[in-house]
Length: 589
Image (cartoon, rainbow, N blue to C red; front, side, top):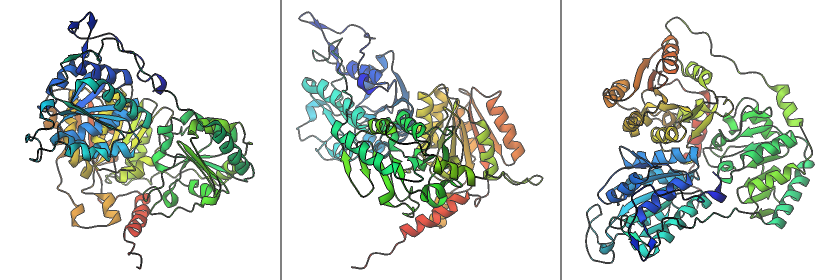
């Protein structure tokens, strides 16, 4: 999305003319908000109706370019807006006051952690009730209406409580523009009696405001480039590692420009997967410490200089704080700042500007890439199966790899799917999303709905564990209603496998469901949906053939039965290290 023109066009009105006062046309708050959402690219809005937002929903529906997607609950609506924002650059959801707002909080917190601009709109109390001593329904029984607002203040970058038409235009536009500039969620509460009232500030053809592009401090940029170039041109075997903040900085092209210019090998942090093209000739895999791609970790950790672009070093991405990375060898490039080893740290230097300028100052150095190619051994293939052998997870993902193309996108749920999907080699233009920073189980069901709604040119392949699916399963209903054609692999291994490998206990075993039976019941003969149960490789290949053939236009739900202890080797290693980090004793006082 071009932020400089993100709110540039206004389009033509799509509803009946508003009343005219004094010869000037006037519009309504509801129509203005609807047009703004269309202008920024949020043309599908995920909602759950409630009495405080019904009038607002009427105005959103009246906008011909806006599609209202009704969800089963607010949490899933928030997850869907998250998934939509990953594809379109911005997402939006609409819920009702407090009972809806507090329900969507978890999803908005996840969007905040992943730097996704989600516009969370809440239908609020009648404007006449503010400042009174009245107690309203949908509240906790106190005459204080700020509880919801206070909750959102911690997980949004801007909040607007609209209970007066005089400043509504300014509050709405400021909140939306802040979401786009900061790449974080915002909260907008709109009093339920205001959306349909004409007001002069909501003119039919408002002057569009634009978001001024951010420009680096030129002196800071030059100093950062000079210090970094001096550092890297002295290195013997430097490497380049891409992280998740490349997305928020909109620096994908600049990253590749630097890689092409330098000849450095390209690795990705696990949460950066999908942001760097894996078909690039310099790509060497995922750097994830002890659970890195084969030969990738060795090349990165043995380098004498590494450029980390947009990293997030948390306990999960660092495998329980066990990375063998030294600060004095690292260039850390964040969206607005560059830090060179133990030396200078320069702010208001923007990532894309910096990478493009640096590419012109570095000498080509392919030493580390040549080292990688020298030691690289192609990955093995799963051992030959016995007759009627139960399906193994590594065989499942071998076949999922074969399904991928530029017309697909992968959504990986929190759990062992993180590790198995991380090993997939993404073809050019193949999308990839997962929620590593927040790691909320169940996220992928709503996110699949939102991503598929945004990227209708791609077929989404979602890999979801049974435990996660039980949290948010009902949004399958909305996928069917929207005519989506995603392929969902439900991996049935009887519990929360990722938590088993961190710390086992009876709480990690869940009640088994007839998952295809549940989806069939939700389908109920309305819309296109096809299900299958798979226990062997032959059944898997037959199901995949059907899903990509005669059922290519249907939502396909394939329940895959695997052994409860059939996990990736990476999860076993990662789980033991994260467990060790979690169980560190208190420091002595």
